[in-house]
Length: 261
Image 1 (tube, rainbow, N blue to C red):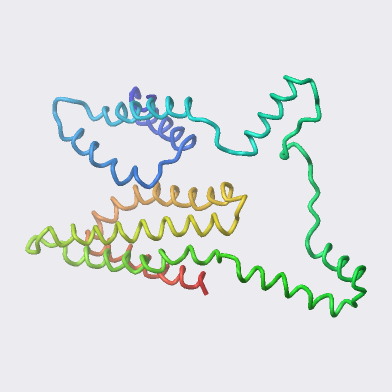
Image 2: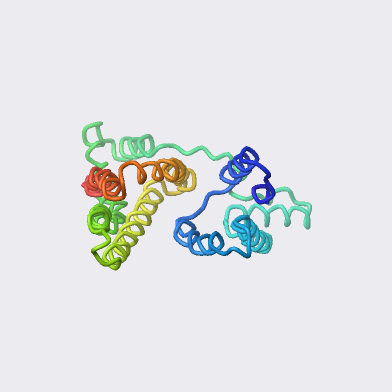
């Protein structure tokens, strides 16, 4: 709303910066954002400020959605339940698991005590007993299985960029780059979803904090490229610009395979 009411560039930059600080756009927004935005800018009967007003309308719906959504995080729900039972009964023994400061002993300290004290084994044989844990870990679902989609979709990124860059000529049908934009979208979703699932699986219960890192990196890169891309297109032309970006995608192409290995 502040951006829509701004009277100069400085005010608008500040408001847009605050919008970016307090909220981040999911992948779907850069995909569908240009659709209404393009028509708003081309329609003479309405101002381009309606790009901001349309965003405000969407936010209003989301605010209502958030206000009426139930809490789904089980530790928090248990904490609320324990406090409610405490209020109703007056018994302060009702506590949720998250309210206890638990001390977790590493498995390396528990297993040697078990094997050495109960079975009276020396340290060498105790070390061999750890192989059972190794077998159990190896039979569990592997984090790397989340990389299959990225391994399958990663080649689509540079190939679609190179193809689009070198077929975007007036004498070549526009359907050529449009068709390969489908391939580009296929690759983006495969890599995007796979990368986030891989990080979430690797960090398990800390996935929320772990996912903040690629999210911040993605948004920072998008913000920089929104400025740099316009300069590149005007100075290098679309062919060499897409070739350069395709080259970057080629450099990162082996990443999912290396992570899997």
